[in-house]
Image (cartoon, rainbow, N blue to C red; front, side):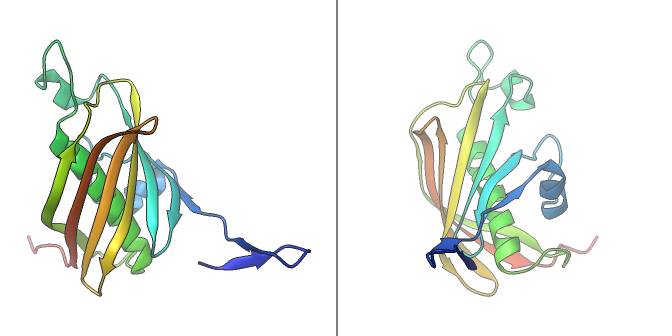
Length: 164
């Protein structure tokens, strides 16, 4: 990450990158009902990303999970973290516009700590554990107002989309 120098000579980190929904749609192939990142609050190239999912009562999955006590499925929390990781990988590996996709390979050490109910902002924090040209390992944490709901490590690979 580049740095700037203030007049007193102290180095300041460059401002973090943010994404609105249009930029997210350009980065990810996902669409409704499986686009699970609404905003990127900060992205530090090569390091980490902080994104947000606004969890609405109108989410399709709440119709059946569970009637009378809607809870976001844990696997969708992991998917939201994976989508944030894909944005981080695309930016870090300079893949924007390449047509390449980021695919899950493994999910490890998934832990669900608290339920996610409608009407909350789900914070998605993801960082690199290891990165290579085509395979990356990430840590991820989902939380609501600082309370962790899900923690996971996962591996993904960058590849061309399947031919149709």
